[in-house]
Image 1 (tube, rainbow, N blue to C red):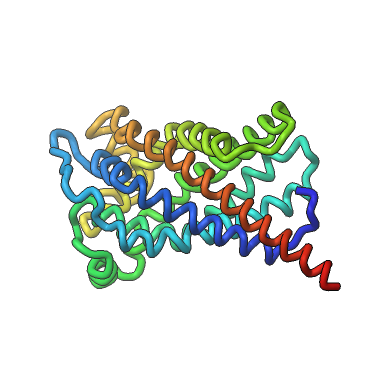
Image 2 (image 1 turned 90 degrees about the horizontal axis):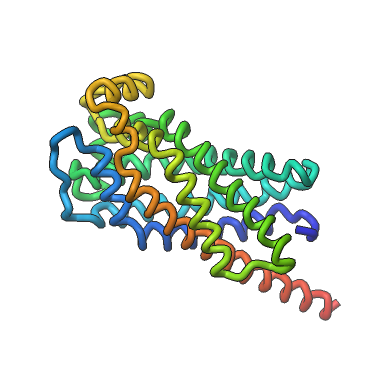
Length: 283
């Protein structure tokens, strides 16, 4: 944290670390995400399909890689800049703000990826190219951004809260331990941050899922309409549909994501330090 601010280096390291972490998490935990989506999409009395739990993974990774890379690529330099601007006792505000800014930028890739993924998970399409082609043909380009408002309503608080909890816990742990954290410790903190945030934002996730998968049926006209319809037809318990796999998925995902993220960042930082040391010797 004491090194001079180098925007390009922090951006590049963030892009590489974020992309690597995102792909590892998505591949490892995709079946749990599929189960969660199908639980949330199911109306009262309908059966859950347990086949094809990896349906749509390939097409999803095409979006997850740049989205994760873009998120961390925006988050890291934004966080560093805000930490330089804010007093130490407002570091949580810097982390919250950086998480929201990163999420906003990444949403331009995340939303179309999520729309295609969830429609494939619920059996509407067999392949990602078919999904994109047919969604655009039937609903227009806007169809790829179905549920964009609900996605932001879920993901901006989610990103802000998760990264703030994670960063604040790391700061507190480092102060107590009086040393740098080890990889398993980063992973454990990431799991806790992910699980808590996942549970808190489940109702928003249910709204986002229903709006994204409705397609041309247009059962809901927006976020408020969706919330009212679910409450009227299924009761308040429906807003917690899929909470168990969601908390499990995001808890384990947080462990893997932050573990891979911090390890990749440390490897890249060591590599940069070695290059700088060699450059100084040559001079």
